[in-house]
Image 1 (tube, rainbow, N blue to C red):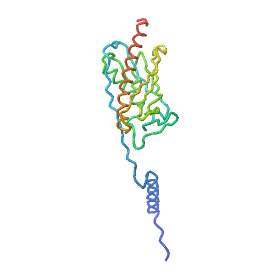
Image 2: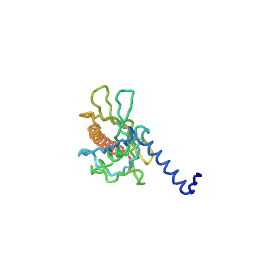
Image 3: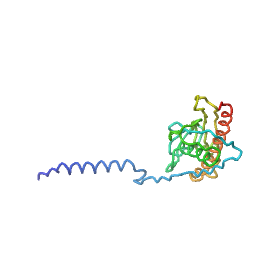
Image 4: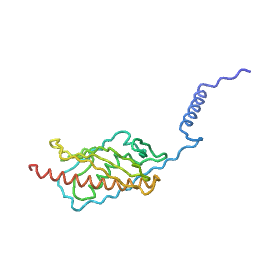
Length: 217
């Protein structure tokens, strides 16, 4: 018996269903089950230092730069010095550059020491600009039994009027995790990020104010 050809619209629909099925299979892991993903958002509570100087100049914070591997939403872990992996089934809610930018900005806003502070992307006019390069954002075992949340950032403060580098410093914060599970590691990152944000914010105010005092009114 001669088979009837499917109408063209039905043929297209059948092909679409077949392609969808193949695509679905390619996204499955381990016995046809999807790998669950837990998203972590570290809670950073940084306390401003009352001894920081109150300033009357404005600061714009540039979006931090980072290598693609460092700025990944995957949570990086270094089990041995020469090996970098990621925690399976886990992810950050934001990439590290966004977390660091938001952390420093919030500390400065909460400090009450500077009235004019915001992101470069807002287009605000500013006297100084803070640029940051994120070099490390990983859990590092360093040969031990427990990982250490490690964040390394190179910060540069520039005078926007003459594009002069006012100060430059590398900040390194390490917070040991109390256990090896990802939730505990993420909590350690929260503490490290809070300390880092506070240190960068305070350093920026001190260095900027020292430079502002040398500038003619």
